Image (cartoon, rainbow, N blue to C red):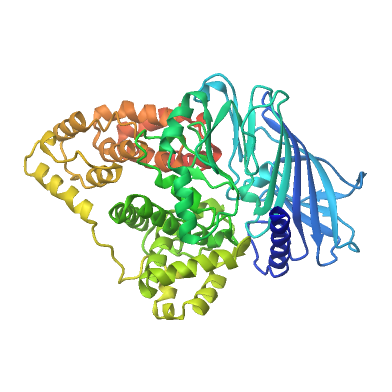
Amino acid sequence: MRNLFLLFFCTFLLNKTMAQNNNTDVHSFAQPQKAYITHLNLNLEADFDNKILKGKATLEYKNIAQTSQIHLDTRDLDILQITQNNQPIKFQLTEPKEYLGQALIIDINPQLNQGTLTIEYQTHPQAAALQWLTPEQTAGKKNPFLFTQSQAILARTWVPCQDSPGIRFTYTATIKTPKNLMAVMSAQNPQIKNSEGIYQFEMKQPIPAYLLALAIGDFEFAPLGERTGVYAENNTLEKAKYEFAELENMLQLAEKLYGKYEWERYDLIVLPPSFPFGGMENPRITFATPTIIAEDRSLISLVAHELAHSWSGNLVTNATWNDFWINEGFTVYFERRIMEAMMGKSYAEMLAYLGYQDLLHTLELFGKDNPDTRLKLDLKDRDPDEGVSEIAYEKGYFFLITLEKKVGRPKFDAFLHQYFQKNAFQGMDTEKFLEYLKKELPETQTIDLNAWIYQPGLPSNFALTLPERFIEVEKQLKKWKNGTPPEKLNTQQWTTHEWLHFIEQLPAEISTDELEKLDQQFKFSQSGNAEIITQWLQITLPLSYTPAFAPAENFLMNVGRRKFLVPIYKAMLKTEQGTQKAKEIYQKARKNYHSVATNTLDKLILEQQR
């Protein structure tokens, strides 16, 4: 009965949202004010030999403007046939546009306010959302693997859809795989393999297209709690079970903060190393990088981040990619509140300060007057992936912290709890949020909202004080600078975050001998912690510290997470020797990276070849 009520409620909100949708999404050909998708049914087969998905997408739609055409988004899809009531119907594909692909315009009956159509199609082997891995590119080395990455506008490269975050639909799917593999999606998932290699899926809650997700591989499932579990390749599963053992507790803490979890289950899948992000918040199943398995649970704030997206992003979604901060700023705030509840205030303060440092580096890199340092972006005629920077995450977070300090935490918590409830399963743009803020928390209008939202950089009066635990780190750093050998420093209780601050604060004029002594004592170059070794390589590679080159090559050959790849390659490119090495490594490693990473790295490396 509850599921029927949920379905009715979600459908009501979907219809209400689309009827009121006045946002123009410059990254979609869809015209939802005329006709929009309400449900998708996929029936696809994964062809690993030819690296394609092939089959049918059946779309249910509402025609609210009595229009004669419905517009979909596609990119590099072979559209074989479109039928309605088993009869072929006319369609056309527009000329391709960079980033956006092609509009698929399908004739429909203007006299009917709803309908269903079926699209027979197949993907291209180079579809940007799909990464087809050979057995050698997986952790197990025995079977191939496929995973998708649909955010921001890549869903259209594997499913004909209305690929805008402001358009939501429910979906079902049948996926056929090789018989020795398992499939999971951002939906209700199997927990064991079946003998036929055919898997059925259902997502009852309406989601935007960028949250469509599929992974196929030789992995297994292990429960972690009543509503939580983890999927991973066999040789990774035990480590994953240990690393994410607190997942059920984390979910309960999140619910205590901002209300009921609306997606029934929360599972993780640990993907092969080529996954380009730390995590992707696909509903019901976060896609996660293996780089967060540090074997000491020190990097689980990333899991807290993806879990928080179940409210901020998946439940209340940025209406367009120009409002990306609506997803990420809220999620960083929520993530750090979860980590504070789990680990204490001093731990969360370290996370916030590291984020502040990252934000300052980004502002320095972009330039203080760069319009891309505004929260409200203008990404017209650009790939929305260019909006993915620390601005949306950290400037968004500190804006919300400013609001919290103005009204007090209890009142702000009540505001957020209500915000997620009242706007559930709907899109949210910056202007709509500011109207909501003005109505619910009028006292925040004394804050310079314009400076935070519409102006570049940070407001001039904003600064963050150094946390107590980092003050202690700097005391040890001062001792080292004054001659105390590394082995005499008091570092025994340090977490990853203290080490990151220590490395970050090393002097620019540090000698090779000093680097060697630190490395011998603390084993930075051999660290299995991706955050620590990346920070270390950023310091040492520009200094031509020879022992850093082999670990850098090993890391770049085996990790595909863009967050780490970009700063390491940039560090190498700062010297002539490093530039040559970077080009050699990239030529070998590029095939292991997802298109999301290569789109960035191609530009970075090619700039050095001009």
